[in-house]
Length: 195
Image (tube, rainbow, N blue to C red; front, side):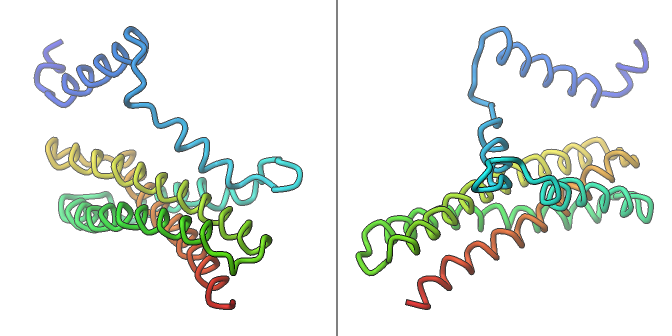
């Protein structure tokens, strides 16, 4: 018990988990539910014809970043300077993602209203816009989780291998999914430019 009192981060963690469980399980509140964002993003990795989940893309886009995070943690345990750099970059990217959401909505309206789109082009663009929307929402979620972990590490000044691997893994996940978003936006704009 004395060890718990000496480590206020344990008390903070217990309080946060208790409040979350009480609101989620006890009061049945869904304000903090992010399952729909994760589910819709994972559904983007299904085969369009068979609706089966594709294992290789899931491995590439979800497991590989965490494997890279573990390797990076072996190379360098995270410290306050790395946390500060990650926090600044993720803060900038998060604001960019919110701006991108507005742009995606405008692009979808343009595709719906533009009579020059052929039905196949419009269908491809709409599907790409929907998948990009889910990817951006997932990126915002990852960014928020990453910022919370970084802030937790800054306040506690506790830097372990597990925390390092998790923060590095989420940072790599953010970067890999950002590449996927860029590819999808390129596909949408390229279809529009080719008309």
